[in-house]
Image (cartoon, rainbow, N blue to C red; front, side, top):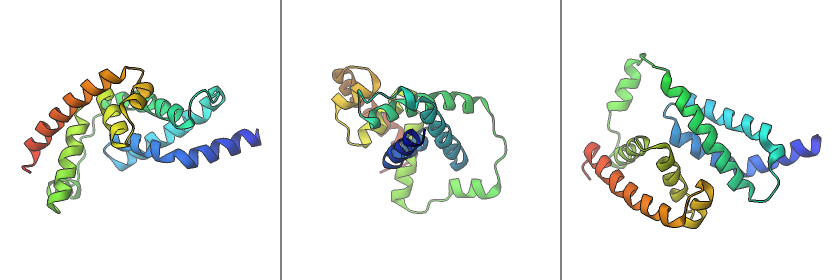
Length: 165
């Protein structure tokens, strides 16, 4: 048991950035990101026995993280949060600097994408090639290329609605 636990902790520490990125893409609030992070870690631990090493641990963790995030996202969308403090409203409406506004606009546009498109963007931003992304998501590299071209156009249009570059 100790060997399994030590191995899991070592691999998780090495690849925890994957979980942070998935949590950041699928959740807006820091509390929700933390909850999703914890849920992914829990599910990874529960499923660690099924990891046979046929693929890279990072590939396995990405797939697991995306599946958990999609399920978690569906559950969290059902909750309606009507409480918004003045501080939050002020923070969301204030422009700190143009670059930050561009980044916010891009993340807002990414947030409006479908679950699979969010996953594509996240992997693309991680500098994975289309073949690797295809392996992660179980689609062809050609399909990834077509989807990415469409997503880039959509993101440009959506982000320009919120911020004039």
